Length: 446
Image (cartoon, rainbow, N blue to C red; front, side, top):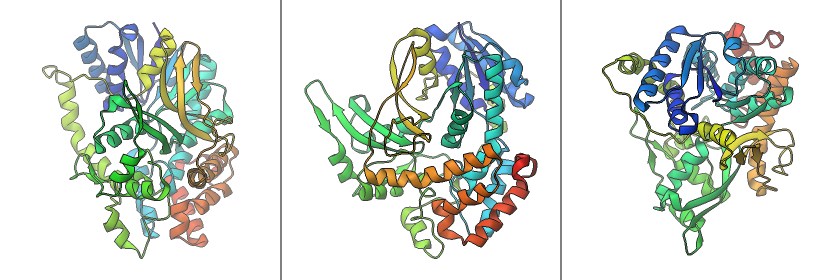
């Protein structure tokens, strides 16, 4: 049975979902599971949850916990990363509050923008420490990364290591379900080709396949996107509008994967000082990620007690995450197709060769096989390049210890550059780096 290591298992709810997916598969139900986290209190809760899942499913995995990363990784077959460096306090609050002093507002701040840049700077060194430990302790293992900012972290890994890895996100399959619901087509009749970069991939085709025919669904999608955008469910809100993605579909002719609240801060067109009417028109939820964090923190103690209560049954169901399926295919040889983040290597011919792309991949007993896409529609590639520029400069800054490239990344960021002068961008970067203190690699502090 494979040894599967969860790095950051104190992310209890996410770990619960992935572990349930793994143990629901008979071929993986006796796996050796190691839960690792630097927070022993959160780790204890995750251990209780893991035991509940084991008992509820009546399976016999070997489950252990540790706060020691190196010890966890010895002889691992699969390593799943799921951590956040710096947490909500202090790091996320710094990433949102300081830019607001300069008039720079964000929604999520985990992928691009000044928040995404800072998150990458403090996260690349820890994830590379996992990779370096893997090279010594489990060099043949496969790394499944769920940590954001996905593209920057995967590019940093691929630029420095030969460890087999793939970056995983649920935006492709999640959005496909949303589109199918919008146009009233059963998702099990839908097939699609989706490619691009993480959080900025597009459905190049979206079709209904029946026993009799294959129907192009884009005319239906185009017609739907001329209507009022729906509200997408989100705890603590009445629902979040998808107006930004509907607008982009109308302008570019293709539907994008990541949500409207994410997409709004990847481009210069929606969050603009002096054009507050855009915020109202597209119902853009500024400071949405801090709101979610505060809600989760407020509800955590109640949730923790519920999860730990021995009298409470645990609810187990399959998620739509790819992780367990990848492990299953690699172990059994049963092929499946997922969308993953990998090094480009001529997969998308009009994007840079060494950038990180999100493409379909076939997984089987011989490994992970990314699909060749070829050339993307030029308008889509042009948009992606504005984000890739920021990603590559940020990765280079951390790997080479070049502080100048942090300024350059912010300077070319589509949202930041729209809002701030060059002088203010330099001042903002300096203030953020100082505020993050020891979270910032030493080479970038001066």
